[in-house]
Image 1 (cartoon, rainbow, N blue to C red):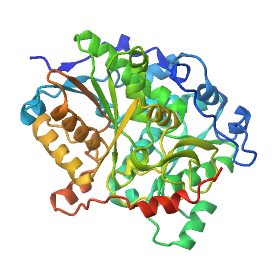
Image 2 (image 1 turned 90 degrees about the vertical axis):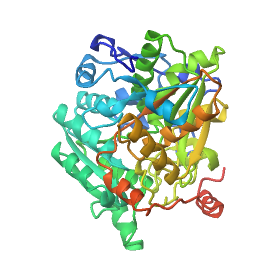
Image 3 (image 1 turned 180 degrees about the vertical axis):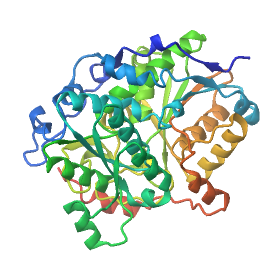
Image 4 (image 1 turned 45 degrees about the horizontal axis):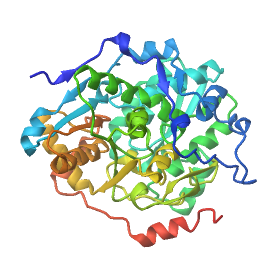
Length: 446
């Protein structure tokens, strides 16, 4: 039985899908934190090029993908859709389980789908250098790769705990020519202030964002870029969902459950939102967002306006949040340690169109071990959450159901995490409510 389904390169999408025109409830606008008025597009120009700002706010349902971007995409796209037949047999599933394999990209994850696009539009605007943050390192790696492909420079602020846990990510980023600093760092005012307050601070994505934004606004040749959360990032990631739709149609399947892991929301959002029109037309497709219990943004956060970074340099965004001052525990899924989530994905969750689920890290690594021992692939710690949720879904689903999850990245640079797992050193941490309440108390109270 065939288990691997591919498309020719001519089927790389020519347009990204923009969900904004199709949302049942319009998105709440980003706000200027001083005036509390909707943000004007020109206010974003110090950190983003105009083309990306236009995409962020665009009312157009489809946006053309430049041929130069599709040309770089062709190094690895279209990516395969794989049936996890051995996993099905191992768990006695009466459902069919598929995964969209984004680990085949040059950097081993889904992140280059937007990194290439963002680097391209910045270069078109005359930008020489990109500054960004990264959690587990997948995004920093993707941006350094993309900048190398487009002859640009790249500076990466990596959350310190991940910087220490994942040394090979540092090497890969540098191999593409990127600069990388542990966050908090000595290179920004924000980083120095945090180190003075707490010399042993392990960092957070919110803090690393503050450092990268500060870097960008203080250098004329530099723009900031974000690997998740924002509308234009999810827009670029729709290549995964659009390709999956074609592949499922090719083999005569209709999905009943679509699953992605969630930190900031880019991989899950890009995977499921191309199916939103069918969902709104009455098709019974369940969108599932799998997150860690240690950072349970969608399952236990509050839906409110909050800053996207710790130092309050970003606009206010309406999203599920644990509070911008939240300092996450050092779990191994570094890409899922963010206090908020993409406003677009949060909008769908608020409407009941996305079902969030939270898991402990040990049960996710258990699922990863089973997946590797059946399908042969070693997943990234973030991806293990989607695998755990897919197994759980298959065990609950109606016989004959079709389950598809996004295999967002491989774990070959995360072996220290697996070493800790095999030694029994991983701890399951469920965030206490008092910590959530404390962090939320610093959010805007209007």
